[in-house]
Length: 326
Image 1 (tube, one colour):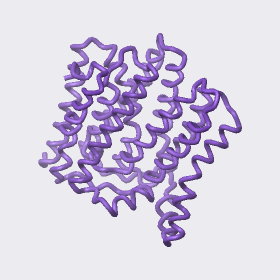
Image 2: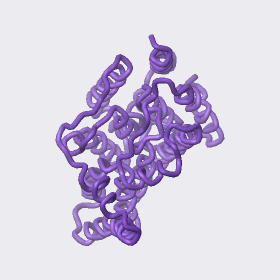
Image 3: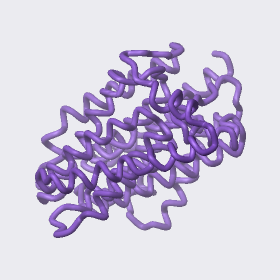
Image 4: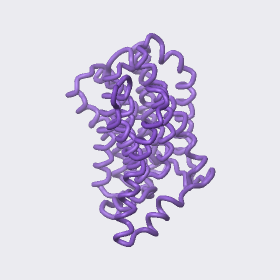
């Protein structure tokens, strides 16, 4: 199956839609898939308009994850982060982001990933730019929007600050621009909430959800398998860190460092977020997808097909066994 995605032709992205439909079709059977819980004021409002258990929500989640996969492929292609230009980064994001039943719903994290990936694209574009004020403002603005859909994404401001330091060095003026971009959506949403008497809801949903190791996970073999897979993938990514940067241009190396920063800090969300659920693993999926795709590009093709096939079939088997009560 991987041979279909070894080309970087945009038209082949249609196969990403088919791939996502196959992996996420279990959502539409809807027997054991948990209802998504809003984790931000904007996701709260969005769920009032779209039932997160509906067929419409399932279709939107497929379109969203495919769109995000295309953004990921664009980032890796434009900044030459891989030795070979393929559709693998987006493909493996879809795979890791659809592995278990807990990752299939129309979740706050899945929505927020769109804005964070766009922020990352803007961030990587500031390298050696004489004037990058617009990009830096956009980074803060997009991270802020992401956190309004899922409050845990506020941690990406740390990644943005460190990323700016990696790409350009610390500049106080640019720090202010980033913070202005960050504050702007909160100010606008806060004014709207005040005007329409939603301010208590805004505070309760958005600003009072900081906690420490507050897990709310229903453990079963499906959830355990997802966590075990993510733990294994994280270990592989860490072991291969030096290989990812081998023979890369300086800009590509810096961008890979930013991806590692994102992978590292997203795991620290557990230290300040309340109500951590299994679907929060979708926060980590883009960066694992990018990094692990490098392994599959460099791997012997027959082994790459074998390992991909095992993970793909394993995801489907786990989903349908649990759906049908086994």
